[in-house]
Structures are given as structure tokens and as C-alpha cells.
Image 1: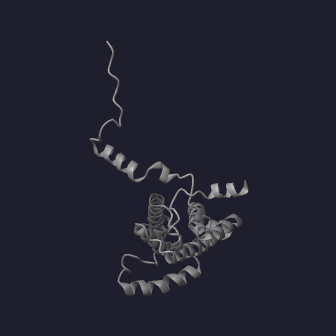
Image 2 (image 1 turned 90 degrees about the vertical axis):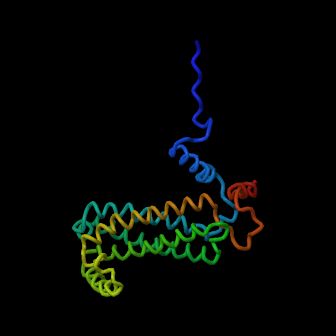
Image 3 (image 1 turned 30 degrees about the horizontal axis):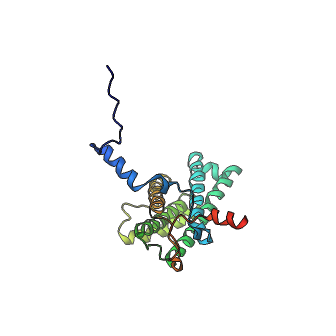
Length: 228
């Protein structure tokens, strides 16, 4: 007597919230969009590079900042290795904001919210705004006279807004937990959402390239054909 073969998991509609969530994700985030093999030909323009450069600088910030947090101020103020990673973290932040500003400016003049990409633009702007808070708390984390001056100058401005009772820039412990964990966690979530939206809706084409297909025009393919 033969036993019936088990039914395939995808044979019928999902009957649980897990199955419905899986189906929604498969429909919204198909693999060919998350991991595309080709990009539109216009992505070869230099203006499209600054988004990736911003992500690279952010990765360096997280890596160097994690090491600084584990070793502590006594290490990055005194030892040669600590001073090196402290400088690496500092200059990564400068490049991060430089690349992000160029990226935002380029997308603004390209009207990057076209083609149902408004949420992509909004998450990019939110990432920039939240990163300003990370930069401020980072300066307060230096534990030197510079950070002390910044803290007490910022204190008056923040108290004038009425949020000084919840955001005390003179409290090093509070600034540390916000700079090391809370704000970076928010930035990571926003950046991941931003990248997913870029994958789902595609890279925005230039305004003067309305007739160019929005996808499947491979950059590498065109160059290989010219070389041949």
C-alpha cells in the first residue's frame, strides 16, 4: 500500500499569517530585484556613485566606532593605535556627510521622487537628519575640552526648544548610549529600508532620459559590445 506524496508548500494559498507574510515578501521583494545582475546604462554616470560611497563610509564608521567603544577613551586618547582609529572614525564621518550631501543634491535636481519613489526620497532625507544627531552626540563623546564647550553651547539651544529634560547633552552616559547604540540603530533601519526601496522601484533615470528603459539596459553589456 503506497502512501500519498506530501503536498508542496506552495500548492495552495497560505492559511496562516506566516505564509501570508512569506507570500507578501516574495511578491514585493522578488530575488531578481534584490540581487539584480545588470543595471541601467545611465547608472554609469558619476552622480550614481555617491550613494554607494555613502554606504561605504557608513560601514567604516560603524567598524571603527565599534572598536573605539570597546576600547574606551583612555585607549583612543593615548595609544598610537587608538589615535589612528579615532582619526579613521573622524574622517569617515566627514566623508559620510560629504558623500551624502552630494548624493542628496544630485537626487534633488534629478527629482528622484518620480515614478512612485517618494518613500525612497523621504527615507534618504530622514537618514541625513538622524545622522546629524549622531554627529552631534559623537562630538560630545570626545571627552575633552572641545566636547565640553560644544555640550554647554548646545545645552542652551536645546533647552530653548523644551526638550532639554529628555535630551541632556551634558550627561556623558546618556550621550554615549545614544551615540553608540540608539541613533546608529535608527540609521541602520532607515538605510536598509532606503536600499530596499531602491531595489524595488529601481534607480531613478535622469530627467532627460525619459525614453530610456528604466531597467535591463546592462552597463557591462554595452561596454563589452563596444570592446568587441
